[in-house]
Image (tube, rainbow, N blue to C red):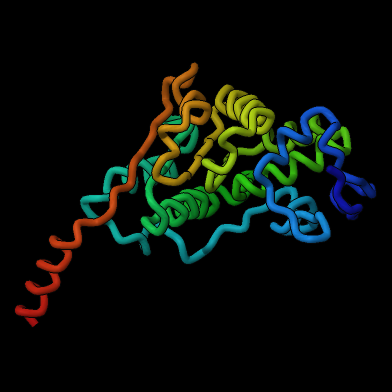
Length: 236
């Protein structure tokens, strides 16, 4: 299967994505395309913004609602924000959608940026990572691709479960993680509820990383929350 030509501005070439090229078929597995065959998640932007810090400034530790269901993940995230690369590394935050994984990931990034504005930070979704890797493979730029991410001071990848089954992508991320870890640079992943059960992802947190940590975020106790509301209302 071949896809339409598109301009990859970051690499300055016109290319046709051919999945028969080594690594491309593996990398594009599960990637969505529109009717014209182009990547839906804005490949143009993904390639152009190679060093992004698109952190949400409103997602900080001060704006995060801490409770019994997320206090461990919050404590881990705060410690990472204060001492990146030295305490817990790499870190995986996982839980159901809407429980605050992305908020905590942004909070870590914002905390580190505020403390050290000169640091190089990359925050992106696993889907965008895959799209950039596909372009790099097709353009014979995999070395530059790896060098870019391995040169970061902080790497934040959201929705890491997206790479499950994509062997080439997993191998690339594992290599980048090893390089960052050796330099005491912080890595943080966030993923869906089943992420910690995905063998190929979980393996990246138990092989050779003595400081790795997996933090689960549980759904809040609704009954406890309702009781608290009733108490507050009675006081008011």
